[in-house]
Amino acid sequence: MKPSSVVYSGLAVLALAGFVATAGAEPRSGRCWVDLYRGPDFSGTQARVFGPVDLANLRDVQGAAWDDAIESLEVGPGAEVSVYENENFVLPKGPVYHQQELQSWGNKDENFRAGMATFTAGHKAHHLGEFGLHRLVSAMKVKCTD
Image (cartoon, rainbow, N blue to C red; front, side, top):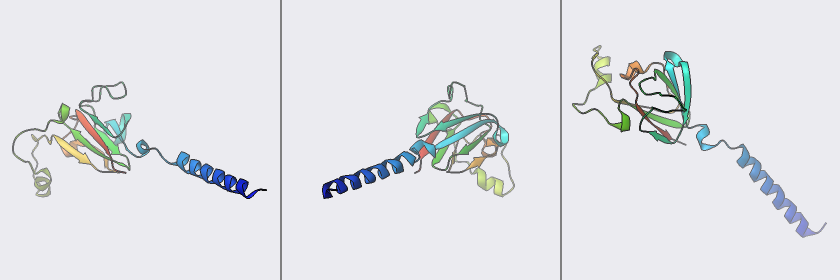
């Protein structure tokens, strides 16, 4: 065997090893997603949205209207998700509301609507009512974190 054929054979093996490693790598969207559910505790109809994506409205998510229909969600391990009460990511105007502080003091404001919430990788929101967004989500941003 000629020395040059050994070099070419070695390069072919390295190239093949690189292909296998690349082929086995998970695509970016594989970890960057959010699962939406129409029911509490991850029940009812479900849709998975892959990121990165900014959805100014949820009138057509996988062929179905999801605006004001989401009750629970689960964030993928490589995503961060922000949900908005209003289309086009419009936040409500007015004074700052400190929902967590009021709850820690044992107080509730039943008339408050949060307007927006952000969930980090791996978060499971069993009921969006805990965030003042029960069936009120009309827009969403899915950001990939890895």
